[in-house]
Amino acid sequence: MNIITTSIEGVLVIEPAVFEDNRGFFMETYQQERYSKSGIKPIFVQDNLSFSVQSTLRGLHYQVKHPQAKLVQVITGEIFDVAVDIRPGSSTFGKWTGAYLSDQNKRQLFIPEGFAHGFCVISKTAHFLYKCSDFYAPEDECGINWADPEIAIDWPEKNPIVSEKDRHNLKLRDLIPKQLPFQEKSR
Image 1 (tube, rainbow, N blue to C red):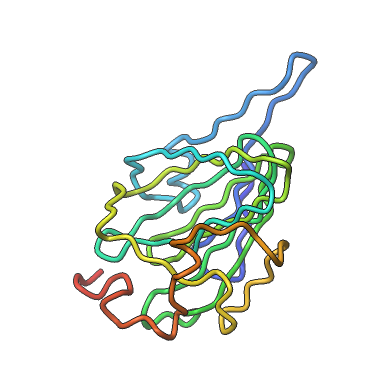
Image 2: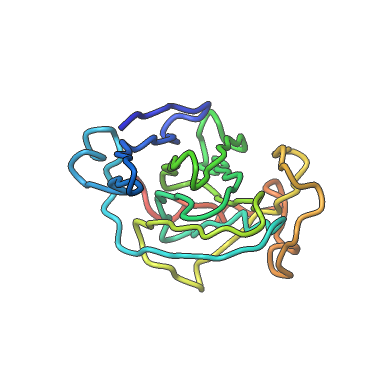
């Protein structure tokens, strides 16, 4: 397993060890002890699988009172995956980092608590699997507009397919403090 740091501390690209032969391949997608030694310490409590068509953009999503760390990967297809730092007081607040994840490169992205997350599908279709450190809480869900000009994410798709809900997400600057993680409990 190879760990690659990104421009934002704590967000990591993981290249799992892949064992290939004429039958196909085998890889561990998660092994708690090994990942913990690499700095990925959350206990994951929920796995989610989504299917999306080309040009779909999902995000930027996060939870306020129940922030989620995520370990994300692509099962089929290719995506551009993004994490935006929304931790109040962070030196990288409002900054983003991204990685291309695919069934070919088999990379994963670890996103700590306190980040908004989104992805854009590059291939014809994509199956996207992710682990979460807290349960999905719809009443706690919040989002940031994917096209926020101050965050200025360089999405590979300029006219993505976006849900009605995501289309109406606010810009980061328009969120009030209680709409950001870590405001009601100290960490």
